Image (tube, rainbow, N blue to C red; front, top):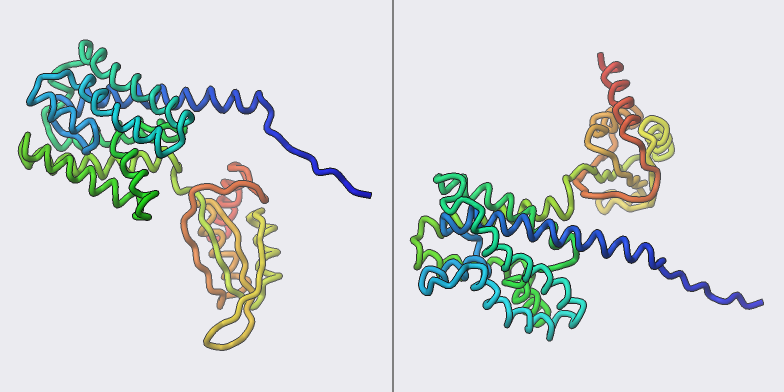
Length: 310
């Protein structure tokens, strides 16, 4: 008897909720970016490249309002993205963020201090990078994009295969050099600092803190080690078989993920069972599914380990 396939489609309510949250991220991200531009970037003429940096240069030579300048520079980039990166799906969200950001820059400039918050250029670069990275990360988390070097980098990456991160650095680097010629090399160097910090902050918003540890254990006692991990740490364990290239002997490889507070406990219980076990621990950003222990159980296990050591 043939069984007809079941088509599983996400409910419309789930799609609507996801869309609402995406636009919340886009809106909050754009608001943060416009405040950051007027409080840190524009007063000091420091920018991490991009259309924002070009608008500062354009403003210095022509007097065109900075938000208006960004909008004018963004129009051909949006057209390029529409042509190469996804048509209307790309256009709607990018146009929404771009209009909110560029128009908001000129509107909020009237209410924010024209001289900025601080006179120290290093503080401006650091906190401007952090705030700008948070805003940009939220925009990306909402599956949007601020028209600028990101569009050019993405198009070139599709055509050339060069990593986007390298293209970002090259294109933004050219803009920062132009800013150095316009405003002086000191501000250009601070712009590089802002660019670096902004990248770190946006990655943190997108991926979160590295709270998961990925563990590989090569041991001659896989059952005993797995049993103690399941009992003491309450984490799922996966086993597969490998071969030592030097000894040509089969070895069991165990895989699991633990939280940072559990690393010492894991070392303790594994060493207790197999002192010769080879343990490799790396960082991970997120783990879903499997046996996931509650935070209160992690604290309890850590407390028990501390008591055992004492």
